[in-house]
Length: 107
Image 1 (tube, rainbow, N blue to C red):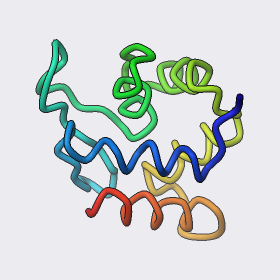
Image 2 (cartoon, rainbow, N blue to C red; image 1 turned 30 degrees about the horizontal axis):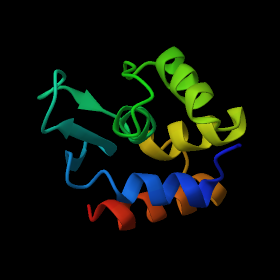
Image 3 (cartoon, rainbow, N blue to C red; image 1 turned 90 degrees about the vertical axis):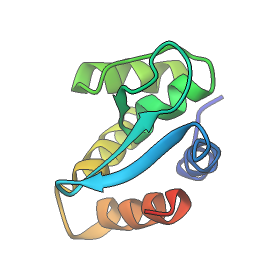
């Protein structure tokens, strides 16, 4: 079963207790509050993967791609989440997704 943008946002909204979310240098990141990786920084995609029990991946492009595969996220959505997290564009889908992500995380 593939994870849609809506399902991803719902899963992301459930991570607010396990991570301290912030926008730093225009990038959305969360610091883990619990577990073996406590204190480490995660981006939204790798944080969802970690919180759903699908493994821990680093904040690199490869790490996000592997986390996306584990979650069943399409490569297009992985790219969109990556661009939205890093604020690469202020137009179109990435900006809309960024706004939704900030809204569900409360940052």
